[in-house]
Length: 138
Image (cartoon, rainbow, N blue to C red):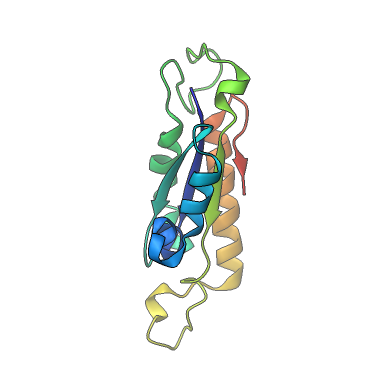
């Protein structure tokens, strides 16, 4: 199977395939044409607090025949390490940075919580990949 590149983020990710804006996801998909599948999981308006609730479903994008995520040793995988060298981008922050007193106040996340949410999402993605090679998380 081809390598997978999963783009997980806010509206900047969601709109990344828009040709009119020369989206970064479209450019990535073009650059990896026939080498990797680029999967867009962008959620417009989401901050890290809300996105942390979606990590398990996004990590499910790595499900492959014979590959059982997050179930520990002997989970039935028969694929090689090179079959599972996937990449995940975690791209949030624009909505978290909304002013706490502005019109986007419901999206605001304090910096300390933002950092903790990002770290927790990355840890969870890695945890769900065990015992297989870790996904590269950018």
